Length: 251
Image (cartoon, rainbow, N blue to C red):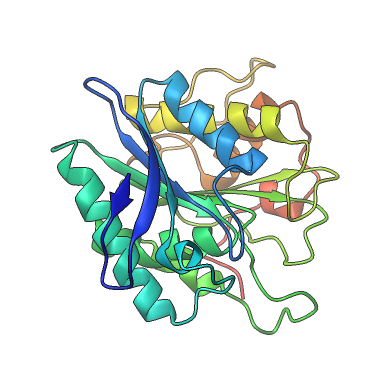
């Protein structure tokens, strides 16, 4: 479907659903498309739960450009896109996300879009070799639940788990998250199920269950505890400090 915006037309592949529990809107990285393995895995995770899922090609890519240009213009167009998609599903919660640059857009616009949560695949914490140029503030600015799924070998860095930010690190994977479709589908599906249920995750496979007195959208689970549980669901270990420690954000 074609969606008109102030930055030009966008295109969306929409998997509609009857009475969906949420609308999942996903987008690509800079220069990419919506058929990458990680986005398709996230799409399937949403479909598994009966969600409506839209994969959006942003206006700059429709024009043939490989770089998004002005972040403000990109964000404005994204908000126009999500508003028009939500009109098709009135009253349905929005979960928005993307990979790489698309994850940044989803975080930056989450508050204005009224998103329930954000999925950040291969979030580029900083340009390669430039940890001094951290984009952690974009994650924090989402103001809602964020799930980050990054590869352990990503040259763009790996965010830290923090308040409302869950981080799962896939061993051996780089920025493309190549070959990680099954793990991504499991992790994202489990996270989406928690959001849809509005309650605790089920017991993890080993029967252990971290507890605390925390309440809210993820009751009784800290950011680090949920990250560890999601990692176990995917059958991976906790190879990165982000899985074992929570903080208010990263520098």
